[in-house]
Image 1 (cartoon, rainbow, N blue to C red):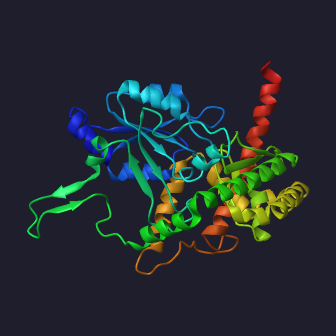
Image 2 (image 1 turned 120 degrees about the vertical axis):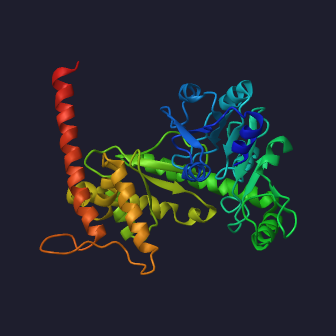
Image 3 (image 1 turned 90 degrees about the vertical axis):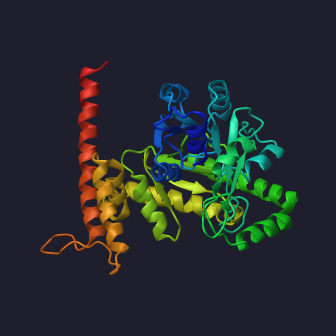
Length: 383
């Protein structure tokens, strides 16, 4: 909203505002752009899952009102090349926002502890705004996140003011008209209680546990950490074609673990907190067991949530997923509040989950067959 309104004032020729962000940007930006009628142009990622600078430059045009980089991005835990983005945006006179919602309250402590963390904040001349969530590594309750600006020259476009309301002159600094002071007081109390010593202590524990987990995962044959994460958020994939990482996730979940599945690529996501120091050894042990279990029982690749997520990740017509979820949402939030169910007759699936599992199993089989065809073609005709 801020950068759109700034462009309206300072670059009135822009009729179709655009923001450039990495494909890995948090989906909240997609949501915000849809709300505020701003076109989001997604830049490709490079081999390290950081935003590709060539792609960013290619997308820049006279309608660009801002660029975004993450520190780090959520899916794979890597920090985008903020310095390069900063220099580019500074030269082009385009604002640069840094999404440090994940890293804002951890990365500075890691710098103090001697970790090699690339600059991502206002020390870089092109950075014009930064977001940071207190409810992540600030350890506070939700409702007190921060949005910081380099100067009032940018922040002033965030304000809403209406002087002709019969009730009086109305001015609001942000979107919520009425906001509870409770989360703000709780955040202040938490920060005062933790202090610099507390944050540094937690940061040290977190990174030691993260290294232990990452090293342990990489030692399991068939599993691999994606890229080189900069802090305590990371994802890992299965490098074994006979083992679906989603099937491994299913088996881990059966053992009581809370598992976050991702797509593009298919992987398991992890976000380490100080409490995980108690369970890191058990997690690694269970993970190795579950991987071996799926390897010895390939049928698990096509059942349960492995089939459902396999379908979602591999279906070629993405609009079909959106349309189905849209229908689910309409029914869930209707006056009846019913979940989507399909009619049952004969061998037909009894409900939506069963339908997705059956369809997912078929999609995985088709993907495997196509993969085999491709491998045969490459081996026979391409040298």
